[in-house]
Amino acid sequence: MNDHEVGFRLNVTFIGIGFLLVLYSIITHLLHPLDGIRFLYNPLIFMISIFISLPITMIFLIIVRTIVGGGQLQYGIKNPKAQKEIILNDSIEDIKNRIVNRLNKLPFHYKIDYRNENKEIWIVFTKDKENFISKFLAHAFRGSIIINESNNRCHLKGELILLDTVLFETGEISILSKILAYILTCSEKLVFTDVSSTFDMAFVLSVLNLLIWSIGHNQSQALIGYSYTVSLASLSILAFSIKFIIQSKTWDNTVKGVLAFVMILIPFITIF
Image (cartoon, rainbow, N blue to C red; front, top):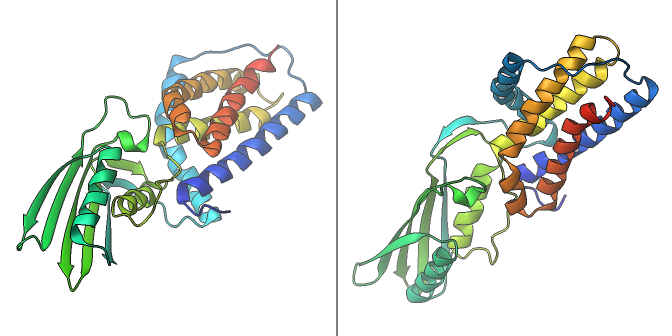
């Protein structure tokens, strides 16, 4: 795998699980076609499905991260941050100009303060939260960079803070580090796999529902019938992630979104 980012590895694992489950459900239906199953809708089951999708996703992520080696799952992280220190041989003004150029591209608002006879530059930058969170860079951020020039070398110390609470960490801290490295001109391009907790919740709930639907084939008509209610709950959560999927523009999020939609549709298609 070329990209060792946690979010990417999780997505690839999700895609593999979803693909195998889709094949299993189709084979199960071909071998044991449903007969006389009614579509059953229960608003209580609908609401419960949405509420339990969060703890189920956390359990699922713990298992998957253990498998893919993404480290221990962290959750409820308030204002996660990344820090980095580097030394560059360029002049302090050249470094400042490159940093300002990248802050403008993201875009961040910033203030520059010259200190110690222009041998030290403090850059404080912020970004407001967008009205609709459809991507990682739509969140609010705060950060600072201190540039010290000494002996024709510059020491840079940077910090970037995400002004939000991460429900469960699926690569957000890794992304913060990548953004900070880009701002500090350590990397030429800013490339990362965008993450969305809502998207993961929709995917995991659709996986669980299709698994129950497949295993419960011709075992319990009520169980199968109410699985359509859970499918609708999955679809409603996925609907909030559509803009995120479109704007992420990465093949793994796109395939993952298509698989989630297919897993939601399979119970409805096979009822006819």
